[in-house]
Image (tube, rainbow over all chains, first blue to last red; front, side, top):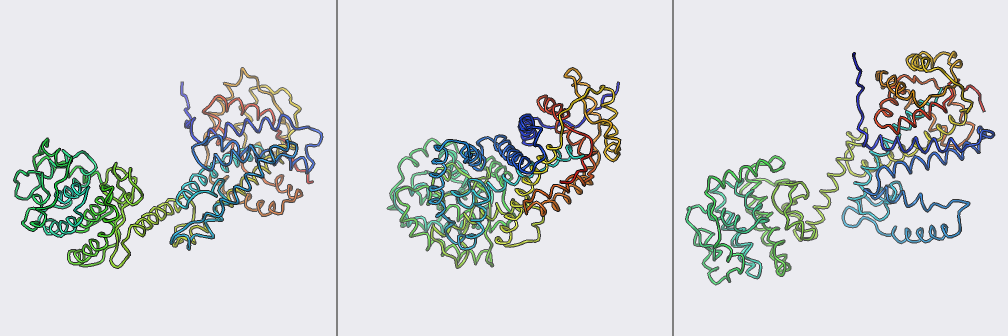
Amino acid sequence: MNKYNPPRMNPSSLRSRFATRFLRSLSKINAKKPTASSSSPTEIFRRYRRIKVAADKSMAYSVRSRRTWSRAMLWKLRTRPCCRRSVKTSTIVRKTRHEKQNKNTTTTTGEDGVVFGVEADELRELVPGGEAMDLYNLLDETAHYIKCLTTQVQVMKKIADFYSP
Amino acid sequence: MLHRLESLESCNYNGMDVAVLERQAARLKWQQQNYVVQNNNLVELCASSMPQFQGLIGSNIGSGQMVQLKRPEVFLGSGDFQEFVNFPVAGAEFGDSEKLDLVPPEAAADYCISRTSSCQMTALNTSVMKEEREDMVLEKMESTTGSGRESFNKRKPEAVADHKGKNKRIKGEGESEVKTKCSTEISRNSSKENSKASEVQKLDYIHVRARRGQATDSHSLAERARREKISMKMKCLQDLVPGCNKITGKAGMLDEIINYVQSLQRQVEFLSMKIAALNSSVQFNVENLPMKEFPAYVANFPAAAKLPAMAGLPYFQLNPLQKESVNCMLNESILPAQTATEGIASASVSISEQSLSSSSMTQLQPFSTWNMDPQGSSSNLTVIFHSSSIVRVEYIRIWHLIRYTPDTDTS
């Protein structure tokens, strides 16, 4: 018998890890949505937020704590101010915002600081956890973050294509 | 040069001036030997144990004489170093010299050569490498001495200036910085200044050399090393970010990187919005569908997508027992060319991105009007879902949730 062996994907690659987690969370989100108001804009917006958070969380969990940006993102997701959460969480968030303001004063020093000042700050805002890193580590994290983002976009594109009629 | 390093090692205490004069004499010596080989060996050996190192020293002495490794001036060969007679002898390092196994020159040369081949050096002529070694030795000297660091720093400018004079003579032109990735255990243990030192075996550190007319204090050298690392990182990023080949200059590159990261993040947001909108049209009325229709459906997926007859196959339920048959069937779908799908997807994504940037819910209309070829997507999903059983279960769940009738309602 002729057996067709499709190209096997590495089960421990970033892509498969992310796809697994994201699909699992998607199914959870779909499971708990009410069928009644499913097409109203607010409901869609709420689901969009949940799906986005699920995507970010899945990606950060796929990377675990190996990278600064994943750690920062996981921390951010855990302590994000949910409206219905207790006050305790929000105070923690306020504290960290204060800490972040202190950290923002560190900029790239030396000759490079003159060149990279503005752009480095912008990059720091984009990459999670980039506020407290020097330029070299920031670039390192940016490279890995770009790689993970492209994986995320590819998988989500395929899922969206799959869903689309 | 071996003797130079040797003497450097011996300088752990004082006798800083030795190094300068040593270097000068050593430079003369260098021109008579195969420096590349020796250099590689030398610096490498600095990091390694003394006996090895001194073995090579002994073997590399030009005259081939056996060396009594007790006084530095012995290694310098010529009689230039009479002034070093009063130089205090090193303590432990020289004491160890007694235990040397002197490697025969041929083996040493082979050893050197093998190390050379394993080096990752950017292309240079040997004279440049000589200077490299000298420089590295300079910094090595700095790194190996703990107490005498300050005095080393003071002497360094004059040494390097000396260096440069000789460099001009030897090379005839200003030479650009040589970047080599080197590491030694010593440099690893030391501060940032030492990261510029020595030989190539692993790829951790970047060697920086002071150019003619540039500041030579340790801070600027460290700064330069840092900048070299950063520029290397920027080159890696250039490969990651598409369309960055033409852009030179760090500021433009950074702008491009920032734009790319922003666009990727927006794409993620947009795709999650799309998934949310598409999911909202899924209904959960699931009917039983015979399994044999399923393979036919998937096989005809591209055709089915374009046909409104898809409405005839809206829902189906997959028996867990039939998972395996589903998977086999899925595996059979061959990956078609994805480029068309991706191209359409990216184009529509970009268009809808702009429309969504206003974050208006009424922009959900474009979702229904897209007729993207699902042929590629289904097989791509097959690849995604093929490997792990967990994903297969999820895939089946998704099949539960999917509604195949095209949604043409406009909000």
